[in-house]
Image (cartoon, rainbow, N blue to C red; front, side, top):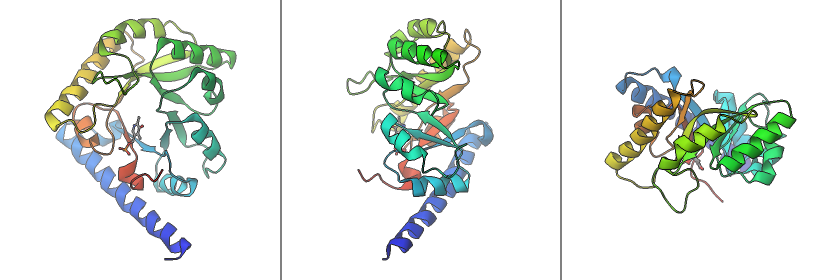
Length: 238
Ligand SMILES: *Cc1c(COP(=O)(O)O)cnc(C)c1O
């Protein structure tokens, strides 16, 4: 295959995948008695070249997520549409906080009070407020960052006092390959934490749950934002 036709083949895969995902989102929302419009779709673009990100955006994707600050920043100049919204969804080192203040509209992966403090400081210096989600390590996995479930309420109470961040909700990645029943239990537990916290923090409006393998289940369990990479772009080539 020539290079051009392989790009075009991938374009049409992305198109078909996006149509299928939208249909799955609509059906999962319907099963849960929810409206599909109440579930935001994020295209996770890690390892994906800008040409394909631009194609997804041309199909209607309005929100992209990247794990790594450097990878996000290096792609920005290649995006056709600078108004597409960007979120950080991976562990953020404090020395990178300053770099993203003007580049992203949310950090979904706040996993310590100290990184929230650093973001608050940098946003305040910039005269802005950074919307954030707290990442919950719902499976208490050593390999994952995030707040332990029992630590979340105390941390939220500290984070809401910071002037440069706005706590908008929770994000979680449950253990990989958990059977569906267990997975639902994890999602439901994060949702209960979300509802509990929201009763005292009315600005909380985002429950970010669900990836390629499980976004329909996450929607049934109350996700307001799903983060989908490989189901849209194909498997990642590192
Ligand atoms: C990579 C990643 C995703 C997307 O994963 P897929 O399984 O490819 O959909 C979602 N959320 C986070 C935090 C990720 O790192």
